[in-house]
Length: 46
Length: 328
Image (cartoon, rainbow over all chains, first blue to last red; front, side, top):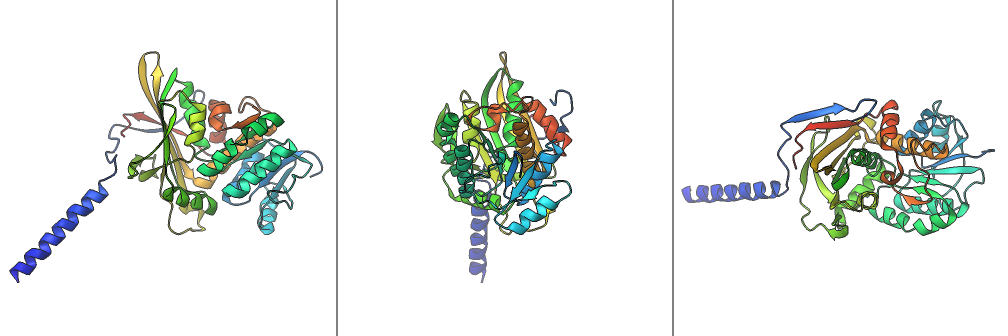
């Protein structure tokens, strides 16, 4: 029983690690914490 | 049409918005609209803010004689056929296509258009389109453009969604040091669009990159990313949120600068407004907005960006700037 439970936990742990690797494979992921968006206004629209 | 006028081909979400934008941009001349579904053309023509005339015309047929400018919001194949007909008739054309293969085929018509002395403005929707206008706007503030990154979120209509789905399965290319290079690392990258779009996973795509490279061949890097298309298409326009983001790195004197511009709104509204504004300017020969250059060009090559930004703002598409430290 304990052995089965341990196996299940190991499998779940491996699945979590694999999922995290797949999810975090992309780049980016750090929000722009400084600054913000503003509407461009006349006359320069800068 | 009894006198020379504009023919809008394709009355989907983008074509309908473009017809409205043409009128709101001050085009008072004849405006004909056509669609493979005649009922759709009749409905767009009858809209009070359009006041157009539905006509029967199919891409590939010779253009109606009274056409002075062709505006297309069509899927990639018919779009190229329509532009070929325009060049054959010596009529300027503006297209909203965003499909990389169609854009490459349209660029291939450059010699033909130059020989005929016909201006053909391609990729005049959202991205390519307003995104290219914003890239030009950023570049105008710099002395040297070194890197251009464009990202887009959202699809304006069914045809646009099909292009997005095709793009996912295709190889993607970027331009490095002037040479086209396949993107081997195709993992998603989070791109931070202005709210309410926010952070979205985007994958590399070739769509639109060619046109930016043509406008800025000196740039060390040109790349485009797009967010995934929804699996199901909804008729609810509010669900079709769209956004563009451009990041231009360059130098003013010896000082490195990064300019980040964006726009968010209903995707069809953004694409249609840009298409309508650029088409109206070309029809009116308004050099304050668009330079009338024979041959096939992208928006970043011919627009007066500040004036176009001002005009689309007046038509309800405000553009935004990011102040701060952009994160990549």
